Each structure stands twice: as C-alpha cells, then as structure tokens.
Image 1 (cartoon, rainbow over the protein chains, first blue to last red):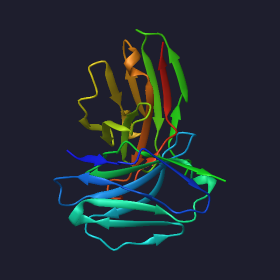
Image 2: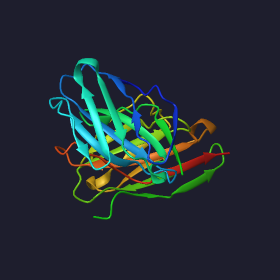
Image 3: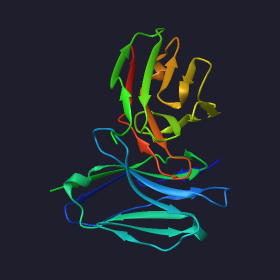
Image 4: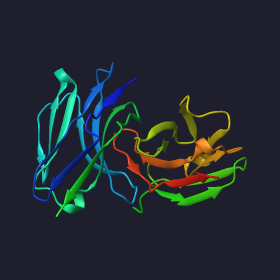
Length: 112
Length: 113
C-alpha cells in the first residue's frame, strides 16, 4: 500500500510567479513510477510528467521541472512563470504495478 | 487515436435505481482501469482489467458494483441499488501493459438524489 501526502491544499499566485508543489509518498516497492497529473475545471486528468524510481536526475520540460529525491521520498513539481491557464488541481501519484495512488491534490490559482 | 471515451458524461438517478457506465479505451491499450473521485479528493482505484480478465478489485468496490470488459475492448461499470454515497465522478483510464503511462477519460459524473 502507498500513501501520498500533498500538504498544500491551495496555492495562489500572480501570473509569472513560480509555483512549487510538494509531494511526499510512502511505498514498500523498490521499483515504481511517479506521476504528476493536472485536473482543470473541465475535470479531465491531464498527464504532465513521469519519473521512474531508478532515475533521480531532475529535468526541465518547458515550464515544468521536478525534483525527485528517493532518500526522502519526495517528488516536488515546479511551474515556472505561471499562467492563468495553469489554474487547476495538481495530483501527485506513485504507481505500483498498474495502480495509481493519488494524493488529495493541490489547488493552484493563478490570477492575472 | 481518439483518446478514452466515457458515456454518459453526466447521470442523475434516484436512490435505489441501477446505473451503467461505459468506457471505450484507446484501441491498442490492453489495460483498463476504473477510478472514483469524490469532491475535494484525489481519484481512488476501483478495479482494472488486462484484456478481458479482471485482475484486481479494491475493497471500495462493494457487492453492488460490477465491472466487465467483454472481448477485451470496451468496459462497463454497473452500480445496483444506488445510494447517495455513490455520488462521485467515475473515471476510466487505459494503458499499454509495459508503457506505464495512463490516459484518462473525461469521466462520468453520477448524482444520486
């Protein structure tokens, strides 16, 4: 069983500010994947990034970047230069053999 | 690739009635998943299929819930004798076995009155 903690319930920023979302997870698996999904008001879950547990290299993809630290079981996600369209709920989700375990989500509100 | 389709998008039903939802996955995906999401919470895993075989069911899936995936294509999720606590968004996702990536549908929002 896995547990996911997204301690930030809501983050409000002004457009162009950076936003960092925290995620801490618990798992007994030695091999797993980690995901971030975005859920805009329309309701559909949109895939953002995936990282496997063997690769701790942090990367940047466009305005998205992430910081994965296996030693502390953290998988934080940053949106650089936020835009109003980034307003959504963001979910961290470790994956154990085909089942995603979602956190409670962090609501991001970006105002002009 | 038309994505994952779910039907209907919204369903309002009276308590005690039966409802059935349909999910059409991406055609080449052999795994199909059902999740339930209540207001203010993240999605919770219900069950998943590999081809036509139902491989796992969550404890959340009571006896009133049944899911099928005949012929390994589309899937249906039926809820019998609905209760107000069943009100939620029901999400379907599909994936390729080895790809470890999931595509979600837009969901079916169920309201039990």
